[in-house]
Image (tube, helix red, strand yellow):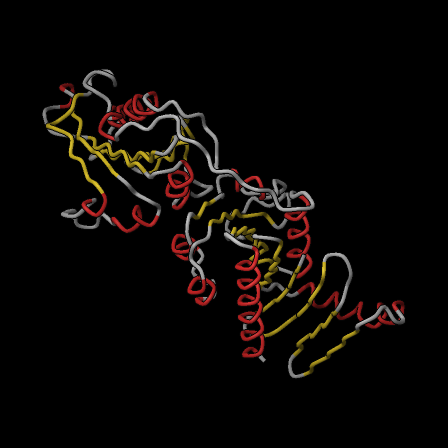
Length: 361
């Protein structure tokens, strides 16, 4: 297994470590204090006590620096590691925890199967399924590139990047609140449960409000969205009112009842450590494009080389007692089709980190 640690702090190189997980083969530490530079390297365990006594004051000073530490590992078809850790120690500890969730060989992660495969239009609640809410007009259907073709600000690329196949939508009204449409319900067939969870997780944040509707539905403003099986469901209320909010939830539950798939998240997420993980921070990437949309700081060459990857990430607290979900570090796992691709990706990432470190000096 190959592991690399590179760390940058405010544009300055703080620490560089190359470690094999079984034996230490090379260790280089550089500490920047004003204009003074100290560099120590060793290839064997010569005079460990002397080295320890000499380095300890510098290490303590280094650990007080709050930086942007990255750990990158490659194991089989997988590239994984840690982003945005405060210290090298925090990055390495979390990287070890990630490694500990795996067996000696990285697991083969199977894709989820779909039980319900109905057309999205068949999943739209009929009149009366949600108490007194009825449809306004006939549902519309969008297939492939037709999605949001004539809708300003519809952002069709978001759904296409996550594997969109077909969608259906319809508006609802209730005689109790007049005759105008008040709720828009959309069902998107994303092709696989992984894709549906991916688009659902893209804009999910720990501070969101949630409602149990088939899955943990995100409740935000006048809207609600959730995923179940291969479908992503998005519901919008046109006005703020308690009866409209109640109608949104009822329509969501009626839609979820039409989908028989159990609530199972992508198996790839099982490779993420559970300790100190921020709830609802998990994200899934069915492609390199979707990965880049969220984690924009990745090396361009990493995705130019091969965007045919799947991956996931989650945020982690620096301390168990912390409640600040913004001040976190991130664990990532990327899966390539072949081990040779993962090795190439590792080399690209390593070169990128070395280049940035050199530029910082």
